[in-house]
Image (cartoon, rainbow, N blue to C red; front, side, top):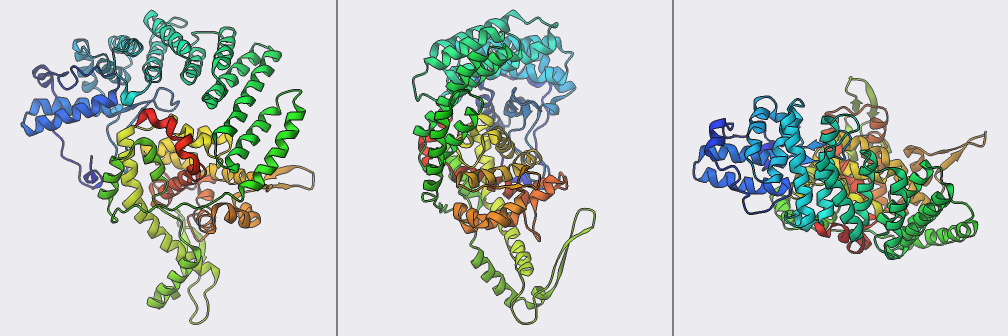
Length: 621
């Protein structure tokens, strides 16, 4: 899809596929012999087949191959509690690639009718699932989808099917297994499960346990709990044994998740001694991360996390005292190691060149480069620029402005520049905001949007792709990491309403996090000895020098202008008070704000990106 999709005119589409088209066309020709297990891989092959049919003016093949390509382009994320189906990408004008709901009614019936004649388990699963998702009374499609998903799982385990981008079979098999379990839950009697689903789960569970793939093993354990395939008494010791079997320093984040889940299960079993043992195992993995990060700030983040975990562990007072001393030392040392990063991308200010550049990058490099597409502009240079603009257009500079909200209410006013003398700070803020708003719009249109579309189209990002970035970034508190990963996913998927409301509220705790790592205390104490966290406004009032030292003055000032001050977007206030409308979520200011939060997260892991992030994404290049 190209930039024509962003125009007001609907793109030209071939006619809809009919039963006669399906009868006349070899549906599986584009994928025959490829042993494909993933629909995203099929999407590319059917796109190519559609282009070839178009060149030959073969209308039936065009209609069929385009339909299947569009269906295969839809992202399937069973772990998403809101909506398991997602369009491949969306545009700023609200348009998006196809979604499952586009194939209701007669289209769903047509898909269900052809499922039985398809050999490919991956294609059969996708078409049957789409048919059933649009018609929950279509029991035949539900059964076909479950059987096909189980075939995919078994094919991946046995090596008969290929994984996308060389993924480990266990990782690739988890999604079809999860989806089969979901459909079975909806279509089976309470307490019963199809035997083929149970057998597929047991095979995958045993295979990952034997191979020591601790990350996917923990995810399967969580599925076992969710769908009642195993009980806590069985899972807890198996998780503990799996965590103990991993050599020291081997993927500590995943090992920690095994200890954490085992601890929760032992708590539910009312076994405090085993819970304490597992909690201490998790602390050990958190501290193991100190050896896998570079920079005192990142190390301090893991020490702080270990101290928080130790609050629930008995008898470790000596370790707590030692770690407290380590934390203070690392916090002071981190102030000496902070630096700024610049990136010169020669794109000639055109989206086409950006798209071409990102089309040649692997996933890790693409996500890193995406964070460096723009830089915060120097505050003093901005003041000089607006003064120059005022001298060039004095009448506009002297005109006062009034800002109103969506209901026409005046929210703030900006005076005009005086006839002589220096304008006040409110005038400078207003003029700089106008300049920055234009800059943000240009950055979104020229760099960020085309890069995002290419990355999402190529890799189909979901939360796991951001786990390493968020997990290793000292900018993000531990409790906020899942929210940030999901927010970045929604941003890349084009769901800007969800992204804005997930990401923007996390800015405050993230800023408090880096202040704490720097040795500051961003809290306030009341007369009654209670303590509360400072708001974003008060953080900038009390700790602006500290933020400027950590982030650089330009970046701290940009955050203040975009999220806090008026005149300006004041996005923190707008989101916190429910004043950001659905349409506002697609405004370049909000779009840029989501990207800026992603940039902030990445800046705190850039020094060790190749060692920390790239290995976690290398299998998905």
